Image 1 (tube, chains in turn red, green):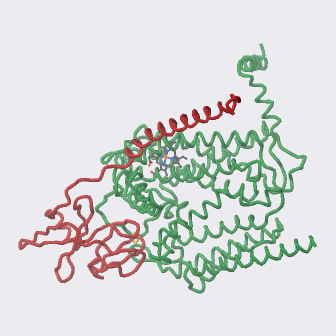
Image 2 (spheres, protein in one colour; image 1 turned 90 degrees about the horizontal axis):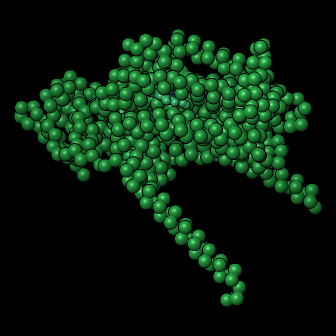
Image 3 (spheres, protein in one colour; image 1 turned 135 degrees about the vertical axis):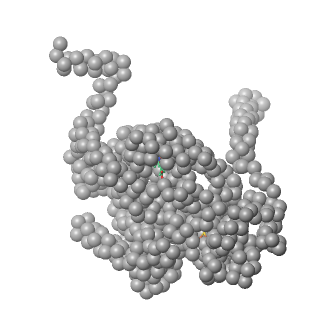
Length: 153
Length: 461
Ligand code: HEM
Ligand code: FES
């Protein structure tokens, strides 16, 4: 073995190959990692805390029976059913994310995109949505004000 | 000095520097095959390229006024269409040409598929073509959001939502695409970068590869005409015809753009600006993507919320991925045509997929369902009306295939039609009808394959 210089060269060359390979991979990785991190946006840090509906929102509830507001990063549909009870549900349909609406006549929450129907507590009645809509706690004050709280687990 | 020597000296000048005569000689000797019924299909790549050129020019013009932004996207498009002289025309040309480019591309792709032009040595031409198709869909999808109007907002919300079903990286991909968990103006910024920079650069590279491959290898002669001595010189004969066709395309495009500046008004083929996007407004019925996505949209609708333990959209998109994957890999799947043998099964597969996609697209249009406004169309009536139309189309298609092309293999077509009949006339669910037809077709294939094995073994012994 030791008297064949060629055999000795082979491991040395493959050592250099490995070194080069590791170097290329390392360089590519260290360039790629920051880019991948850069691509993913930061989570929204708007406060999710209680949101008091504005007078405009309350007026919309009077005229349309429902309104869609932002609570932190989420969109929430707030509506008053025929028993005057106020409900707040996630407004984003669990099927493909269309914005839902409240149908006062049928007392259901309806998604127009693929005819998904939910009851007023957010449970799926029919159509393609796979999961119920998340429910939010609401407080009503005597002067007609509405406060939407964080999501109920 | 006569003008001919003048032009010759110009040619000499160029030839000395750039060896241009060789190129002209090459183009004169390059031939386009004549034979069979295929001649007309060789022009569709060229028309696609024509419409693409129009996209670049009209897109650049739009860019002179368009500004992406919460308070500018919608407003600048509005300004372009209402104030800028002929702005409405530039926008109309850009959008019409986008639709015509995709139409031409789809027909081009199906015709090369049915002519089996993907056979070796042209596999990579097919693959680059498939990439061009995907990039063009990306152009359409990203451009659609740019006006930031209500319809685009909702259609993009629904369209991007399906990304979350991608295994493992779905959620990450969704947020990277949207620039956040929901569609916002950040999504528009990302789509703008895609539409104006990323996709153009990519498509230039891929068009380049596609064309170089075609130049090196020439056009595929139709199977059975490989040795046909007849051919048409590319230059000047084919090129002049090409130019004439481009002129006709331009006239057609201008006519449509002038007389129907907001599209023909079919869902998926209209671009009335409408209201500005408002994330706090509820969605309304009839939100549909552009026509070339309608079949996927409809397939998503046919799936129930849950199916065998996976969510419906995941299963539907899995199916679409399988269909697209098969399509991309056809040069390798169609093994017998690699050896120059006829593969009527693949011809039938291509023809049947036209019927399959056609039926879903018609259904997505809610043809014959009544409905409108707040009244939802009746799904059973839609299924029946569309089934009648597709059966009519299939009858014509089959007649042509039998009488003109002497085809005799109709297994996949039969399965697709059986599904449409079971679903449209007997009210069976689309998926169940599909499953039954699929099992029957597989049965036919297995029996036929077994039969062939037996013949083969008989021959050996
Ligand atoms: C294959 C190529 C292309 C396709 C299929 C395509 C498709 C589209 C579509 C469907 C829209 C939406 C139009 C609307 O609804 O108003 C759009 C908008 C736009 N595109 Fe393109 N596009 C292509 C290439 C380009 C290029 C190369 C540029 C610029 C260099 C460009 C610039 C724009 C601009 C500025 C808009 C917004 C204006 C508008 O919406 O009317 N496009 N594109
Ligand atoms: S997005 Fe709501 S039903 Fe499909």
